[in-house]
Length: 415
Image 1: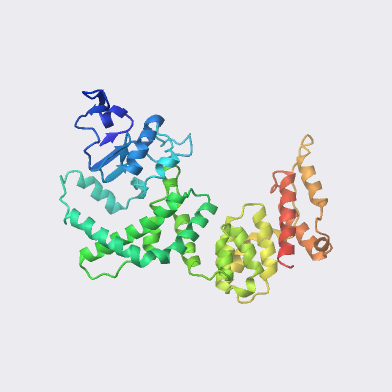
Image 2: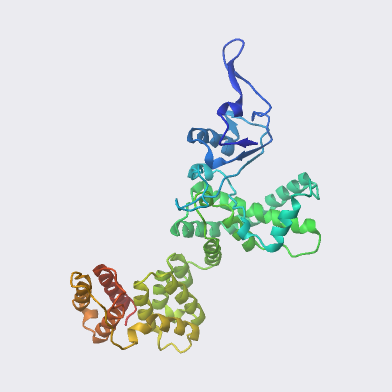
């Protein structure tokens, strides 16, 4: 066990000394040197000096040090404090740096340990009492458990690797589109870790001997995804979003390339996916469209959200099979557009910004002549722009963005 914030390189390899014939270096080792280690645990990994981090690379990835193979070393573990994105966070760990992405990418598994807030009441109680319980003997032979899992893993590789390759390819594309870091090394690791987790789950069920069903591959895939990404070592992760990506990639892998559903699932942006759904709405089931509408509207930022909701509503308002919940969600978003009334605001004589915003609304250009010629378009666009007054705009650029977006949607949706 090494505390990476305190060790020097000599603590790992010993002290180098010339050999008797002065032809090579030999190391005067200590009990803490790494040469004969079978398992290495490196604590405080993200408090390591950068120059020492570079020397840990070959140990973790290649089981080598100073170019020499560490034949006895089988397992490499490390621990680090959680990353923090906010310098003003009172819970951040001073002195803890973001882990080098390349170093994090060497670990097949990157697991977030639950904090106190993540534990159930029962787990908290168990944790408090267990500190007095002393040593726990493992209930079964750990060596046999590992051996059984290795055999199960080899069988899983034969049975599932080809079928899962399409899922991994789809998943990696979706992860990259969603802003996650996935190298070629990590893509290959994802397949291995998925198969390893599935093998371990199968062995644990068999060892329990309670006749439970064989674990499903999809659950193993979800576990693998949330416990293998190196992003976990660099920033807080939205695990619900990861699970959703895993579910979509799993569904997409089984869909034919020419399917409209594949076109939808390949689009990572929920708002853009909703736009595609409106265009191909005749090929979609009403409930499926309602799901896409909820995700798309919810992810679109203001003030563009109201423009999207209005265009979608106008395109599907005659669709009688559409679930009432979807219609209600759209109606709530666009209510200010259809709600008549007078609006007043106090404007300082020294502040002409509001006057410029009102003026920008009345002089909004029409870039598409065919769309602009439509009186329906102009009426809905003007009502949309005015619905944000008196305080819905920050700048004149907001008005231009809303008008341009609504005009684009009007044309795309064939309104």
